[in-house]
Image 1 (cartoon, rainbow, N blue to C red):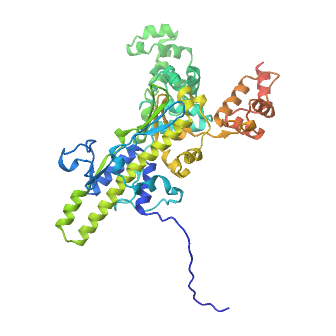
Image 2: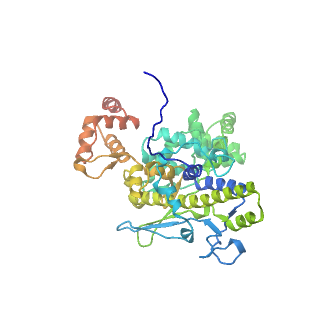
Image 3: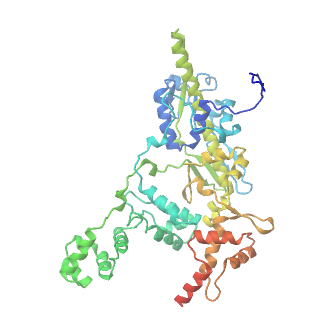
Length: 503
């Protein structure tokens, strides 16, 4: 068959991602602190951008930096639009308070937050200026922080979601020296759990590196390090209880209290001198360790929850279109006109992207609060199963959009500050099509059943399945085995052998 050139017509649809749209998508992934750093770069490179002060809506003050109903063609500014949403207890209805920026944003901004399928965006693309894409990692310290190190170890040591939530809350109260600066009773009250449960998680975390971290005082810090070395005996315990006498060089009294000779006492003191009183200083204090909440959740006086954006960390930006008009009127140079036109286009798009970003974050956060109101009201044990799809369907956006919004975003609540991703948990179906059960709740139930077992009634995986199904939880035996192994719990045969050996 002869080969010959041909012309064929083909009709197809595809999503074309402009550089500006790609940059707007990437803005969603940034926290407020990272966003402020990005905006600073834009302010330096774009002559039409100005930093807002929060007083832009006052007429006639400082000339061009004023906004009124008839001056939107001169300037636009980004502000925390729809910065507050409230949720009433009976029906969880949400009302959005509009700001003056709502009238300044054009309908084109809606595409940034709702109708575009962001799952098809590429990792490369253009930016608002010629300096390239904003790299959040370049704006943080390279060395790992103490909080990062503790978080990584917590993820491996705590299989249960509830334990990880308690652990993350404890990490938030660790200072740069490695000491826990919070009362366990206060943390327990805030999270709605028992103080014994918080102390159990703390005890587990005190085995993390660096040894001695998560201690509540100097004595506990030194005791943790000595216990790790196998040197925490009775004389050493007494010595730790009398550290003030070491500082006062009251050696005879210490010898009497510890019931050791002077040489033996010096050996104990040398062991203490070899320890680190500030174990946290072995790590750097990177900028990523500083957590500024992006959203505030507060309880309303009449019940329900109010969801607000943290406007203090949101950058405010002005677009000086008047300056653009003056420059274009004074020059005939085509290159200058093209440059100024690009600057105005990029600046306007940045303003609209910032506004839509704020709206999208607020929508997602409000839906999370709506689904997890039991957690806010009663504590960790009342968290409901939740996934990205549920939130995406509720706010009519794509799952990838919700995933970007929940990355590196933190919510300050009456129970503490949590990353948005912590509110998403897997679901276990119910018998008869009832309400789904959180996977973390099921893990907790399994752990309780096993902790309460005694000879000769050691529960097999099949027996646990029967007990959970009696509670309306539809779960398979292999799932029980998987959850049991993830919690470090041995099989029924091994548990029976251990119980017999202990009896």
